Length: 295
Image 1: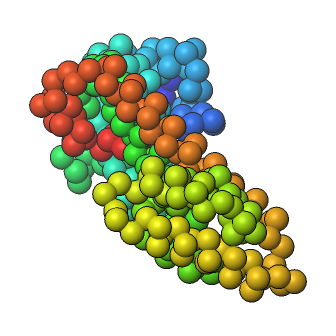
Image 2: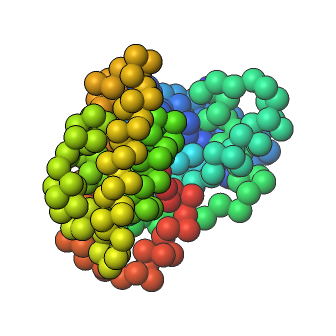
């Protein structure tokens, strides 16, 4: 049975609300009203994720003060929903996507739709202990997002490094080994002499200066330089007529550019987090335990 939002709530003994949050589409809302006689009335409606839509959500749920709506932490949509629920005199609880999927499978099997998801989330309180979401302070949220972006940049940087290593291991493994495990040396040398033939023909003094600058506390710099130059020459000769060395140099430059971009992103995110300030770390750790963390 579908009810209008003007239905009197005096006869309602209990209310369950489930919200299937959307990023670009509309939020699907399911309101389950339990009467004093045990009858269950269901009201379903949709609201857009716009300011007008959130105001509509507040108005539709205002007749049920103290209601605890349930949603999944889809992107950052939970923040706007939580504010709209608080304006309606209620609260928002978050259920992890894995738990919601198991609940949906138990209730509706393999059937899945936005309407079904909203209905399932409305019933989450029957199985899960739900706690109202404690909204983070603006500084806490900003700090969390800064570190989340930094973490993503670190992952990207590691991915780009692995791609460069993978390329080096088949294209010029002896040259890569000659760097002696020093990534700064490898990046500096390859960044200056992208082409194998150019590195092989480079002046010994020039290569020595670069290696010495990026290899601190190592006494075998001359031997390392000779291994680098000879490795580049040997692989340039080996690939002659079989591999486009200009294209190989371009591949190396792209990997190095990706790594530099990731490093710059890490630095910007670190600076942003430091500018925000440490704040109350105890409160931040407490909030980070909520299902919204990492979204």
